[in-house]
Image (cartoon, rainbow, N blue to C red; front, side, top):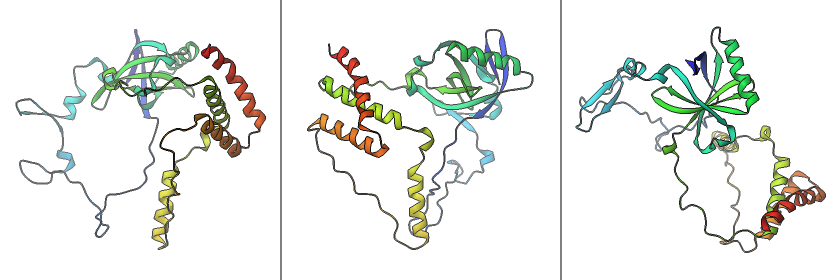
Length: 275
């Protein structure tokens, strides 16, 4: 595959940039714990079909089925079948995160090192990202081309008509008061200062492992903590915000003066908006 923009073509290799950690849960028979297997059956013959005999097909409106082989799909009359075609460059902040899909790292292939580095440095200096069109597997999509740790990164984008509108979702509520905004900003500043990406991990998988280990050892597994009872409606938003700030401060050992400084930083902006 190659990145193409203008008359420039840069051969690249494509590598998955992410991986999802499995919880290890399997479908089993509740009666005896034996595994449940999914098998492929042919409707016409009523027999199980080996995977090597399974291909893709398209059903026409009249019921006829067109069988498509891997050769058919790899030889589609499509310019982007073997290329990452850069359509243009836009500021990174104009890309809606809602539309982002799976990410891939692109490595330089063969003698493509010099043009690869040229494109990488041009993107890094400009602050722009490329918008490209590509085909991976059996689907064409848009993609964002950007730089991550000195490597070109390609992240799929949903088509505009695949992103659902937000119509009717925003609550019909009065605008917040200036003091509520100031307190919310104080809480946001508190949580911003104490957030660490490297400390985040999958607690669900850890809890699942604790339950599985307990069951294997024949002991009572740990249970979920008591659910916090929340009021049916917000009685005093300021009191809840204040309690949240105090809880964050206590959890992370931040001094009262630190929270106070954060409140002062939030105050001028809030006053300007309220005026």
